[in-house]
Image (cartoon, rainbow, N blue to C red; front, side, top):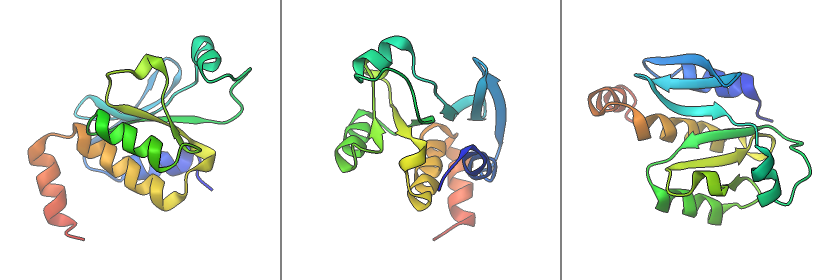
Length: 130
């Protein structure tokens, strides 16, 4: 099972990551750019998803591009989703309770790569060749 402590550990294990609070929820950044965050759903998003309330935690994560976002949703729509608020923005929403830990590890790392400076990302890859 995955939770916010797992997200925090995964994010903070990546170089130059900081944790901040944005709109009252945790947000992890690399060089000032957010890559994963706690994303409570807004009233209009709940309506768009045909939900009365948010019963599970939602993780927001940056992705490389819109094509990646759409591929993730197609891969597993029970875990990955989006709302109109994120149209034309390279980020995906994730039902945190539903994502397997191994997949979460990949997602957090990929989100970090989506916004990390190229020199920092290259250095990390050289230290972690696998």
